[in-house]
Length: 346
Image 1 (cartoon, rainbow, N blue to C red):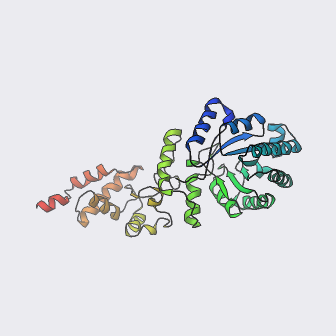
Image 2 (spheres, helix red, strand yellow):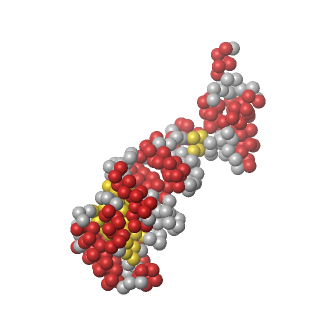
Image 3 (tube, rainbow, N blue to C red):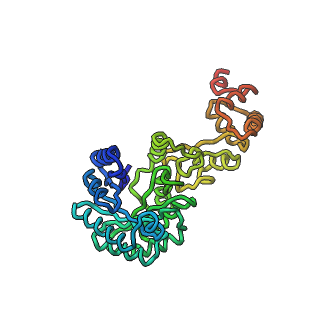
């Protein structure tokens, strides 16, 4: 579907993961990336897996340096530079991440970015590791990294702890980042990462930028990942959720029947993401939706019959449940609504 880079995994993690990354690198026509700490064993495993890019990372916030990595700023910088140099020596594209960048002291963040860029890093990633950034703050931080990175391109990695991962990723683009790391359905550590489908469609539809992604398979991709990961997609998930293009309210449904742009974004249609529009029947349903669904089912209702069926739909949906098409047909038959084929025979 045109995804630019696939970060396939952490090759040193286990034999199984090494083999998975290797297999993906061998079978994919896009750039495949392997993850590595600034540790020789990690880097060599990533290089041996045959990836096109190695993404090396080191903690840079004081809390992580002291209580996770147990290293000084100087030691972190030295290891980061050595890691970048080793990857570049192997002739492979290199990305460097100052982990927990949004909680890292500003001057040190710029220093380590400059050092790794000077060492040959092709990409500098800006990770909001703990999801504490706001779009305004993240935009300023990324702009500073873009300046410090020199000729290296900038990438962003955002987490959704406060529900702002996708907004922060888009803010990163606004600050000059060339790329954002995303995950299908937003799955990831804790509350997850910026969602692939949300970031792509925001850039495509709201900013009018052609990403090169085939967006018409986003919904299919979401369903595949939902099944394989066993992580359910909420019905109200933007872009790919079951309710993303469904309408129950009588006012909304009537407007959409007349012109879908009335109560949909317009710049993003269900067809663009491989989904279908749905008129949902329930307690908020109006006569326009009922008539539309009855006619689709082959009935030819009068105005009074539509009103009668609508009342039944509202009553059935009063307990916060949806009315199925089978129930709608039963309501129509109960009050004697004529079917189109019966009308023709008569």
